[in-house]
Amino acid sequence: MKQSRFDEIIDRRNSGCYKYDALKMLFGKSELIPLWVADMDFSVSDEIISALSNRIKHPVFGYNLHLNDFYEAIISWQQRRFDWAVRKDWIIAVPGLVPALSLAVLSLTEQGDGVLIQTPVYRPFYDAVIDHKRKLITSPLVNSNGVYNIDWQDFEEKLKKAKLFIFCSPHNPVCRVWTQDELTKIGNLCAKYKVPIFSDEIHADIVYPGYRHIPLASLKDFSNICITGVSPSKSFNIAGLATAVVIVSNAEIRNKFNELNTKLHLYMGNTFGIRALIAAYNESEGWLEELLCYLNKSRIYITEFVHNELSKVILSPIEGTFLAWLDFRNWDLPDAELQEIMINKAGLALEPGTEFGKDGEGFMRLNFGCPQSILKLALKRLQILAKEYE
Ligand SMILES: Cc1ncc(COP(=O)(O)O)c(C=O)c1O
Image (cartoon, rainbow, N blue to C red; front, side, top):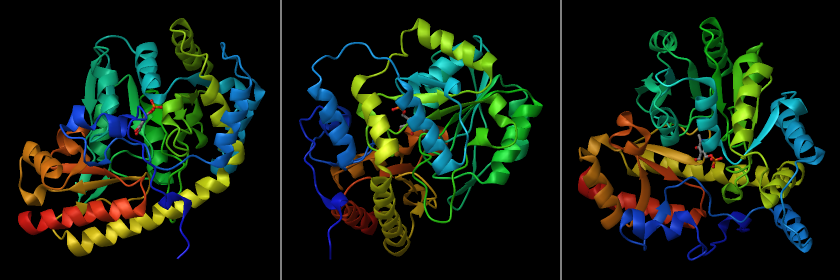
């Protein structure tokens, strides 16, 4: 069978990479299969390599200015992939969506204000609220046999007390790609209670057949209440280049956000990140399509494997992202022990569900952005564990 480019095993150790080089520090051992932090073990597209190599030939690396080609690449991508017409003056460059979460909280709310999130969710959503002394309001997603849905009544009640809603779309870690109906309902409720939305759409490009990512701001007049976070960092595997943008059509919200971003001097960007973003959006669509086919095969493999071999583990349907959300509660182990056996018996570094909040207890997140040979090895190790714990 013809090998895919994504089958190549790249030795990332000692490249100053968090996923491998922090294993000993964070998991106590370095010889583990790292399937935790959300970057992929794949080489970036040839087009990105070539854009970066070309930039390196120019021997000066001073401060940057985002030229038209940066904005045009983003505008064209949103139009082509998501049918969303974005204007250049709506786009603000940021070093990442995690800093953008804090910028939104700081610029749109005051200390003590309520900020709503839907849990379980990516840890920095909690931190952006708590670290800045805002009041964390949670509306837990309802899990029925692995499928997560919004409790609309609870969401509406909580929204009444919030000054900002931080939304994850597609959702990390529960893998939901929200439907148009759900998005419309969310937008209508936030508009009704005048609550602006930070819509983190970093996983927008990784969505599987049968599902479609719709930017929340592209629906109805929701653009007026949305700060949309987008970035090529997950989809094109360039998280280390620290380049993302927020898109805000509402001038009042945009000015508040922009003022803080400018004051903190976060707007100038990374020389290589800028070039990589342009090469990703303008030239690497073919690479992304290949990646989506590969990840889709991995996703089908995991789904069947869990169903056939890990009968007591529940996998949430993977609608989007390269992250599988696994429910180990039937193994009936305290979280510390679950983590301990993953590390010491299975040799796996998975992201513990508790990282995503209280409703992640008993869960593990598995990053399948790796060659399928590695994924299969990791699943085999889980199967051996299952013999002991199921
Ligand atoms: C929902 C979500 N937002 C943001 C990020 C990270 O964003 P950045 O690297 O741009 O700060 C991640 C990374 O996993 C994520 O899952």
